Image (cartoon, rainbow, N blue to C red; front, side, top):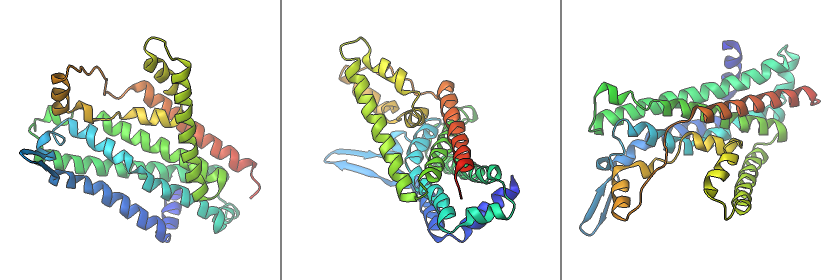
Length: 281
């Protein structure tokens, strides 16, 4: 594993675009801390986001992993360009000539995906911990370590998403086309979701029936790992209660969703390997 990772990071070391994108990605993750400085003033109404509870433990684990997961597209560009460069610069063929098997080649890419996901998760953990210790109203150990399953969900989400990108990179060989294919798949899932709402129109709990089907699709499953955290805020709930709205939404990380995303990850890596086996390089 270490040998294969060394090969991949050696390639990335001399890829300027990948280094720039990686730096931008981690810089943006760090910039989550800037949210603490945002203040809104509308006449007599003043809101300081840091005082609104977004950095309170354990909520911060939910909020920061959700925000950080939006930025994953920067690393996706690194993953797909890493694959397209193998074809453009003929390094894939050279690696195979030098004795690397196709299985080892795919594993080297998958290990890189895991490495990027793990580094991102640790990075978010450190940033969140520092922000929480500075701004949180609750600093008891039991509260700090609760809801850490959001970090597990964040890691699983990145691994699944980047594995999808890796598969598309191998399938179409060009990073721009791979990103386009990802967008097209997202549109297809959205259209299918709209079709399901039309199909189940008039039925009781239409949303629940649609969700029961959509949860098995890859991008929807990845999205379900970390649900939006904004309606969980106390201020939002209080405002909703005054208007007669009651939230019954579950924000927890579902083990079944982790299994679904993990299965899709396996499928993407397996298909990548099979595709590489059949392809004439």
